[in-house]
Image (tube, rainbow over all chains, first blue to last red; front, top):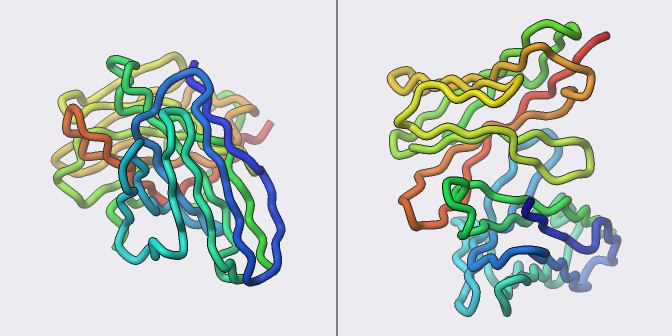
Length: 119
Length: 115
C-alpha cells in the first residue's frame, strides 16, 4: 500500500532556531500533501495544503511566514518552522493523497509524525 | 467550533464484546467520512470510510453506520481484540470528486480493550 515517510520523528531545538520536517511519498506521486498539528488530547488540526509547484494554502490562523511549506516535487513536501518558540512544540503530521487510487481517492496516507520540542 | 465531535474521550470494552465509537458532525457539506486508528507516537492509519450515499459499510470486524438526518456516524468493532486498543479518530470531508480537501478531525476516542 501507499507509504508516507516523515523525518525526523523527533527533534529538539533551541528557541529562535529553525527546524525543517520532510514528508515523502515513497511509492506514489502526491500532487497534494497536507500538514496537520496535534496538541495533547486534541484533534489533528489542518495547518495547510501543499500543492506541488505552487504556493501552499494555509488555514485561518496559521502564520505562513512562521510555517514555511515547500512542495518541490511530486514526492516531497517540507515544513520549516522558523524562529521556533516553546509554544510551537507539538506533534506535526503530514499526509498525502494518492490520486491514482481509484475509489480510495479520498483516503489519505499519513506519515508517522514529528515530535518537535522547543527549549 | 468543533465541526466533528467525538464526545467520549475514552471507552473501555471487554475482549470479545462489541465496541461502539460515536461521532457527530455539524457541517451539512460533509459527504465523506473516515475512521482512523492511531497508536502512540505514530501517525493515524486508515481504517474504514463511508460515502454519504450509503448508510453502512462493512470490512471484516469493522462496520461504520451513517445516519445523515441525525448527522451521526458510529464505528462498530466486533469482536473486540486487545490489538484494537488505540485512539480512534473520526474525520470528515466535503469531497468534491476531484478536489483534495483536507480532513476535519474529531478529538479522538481512546479505546481500551480489557482481557
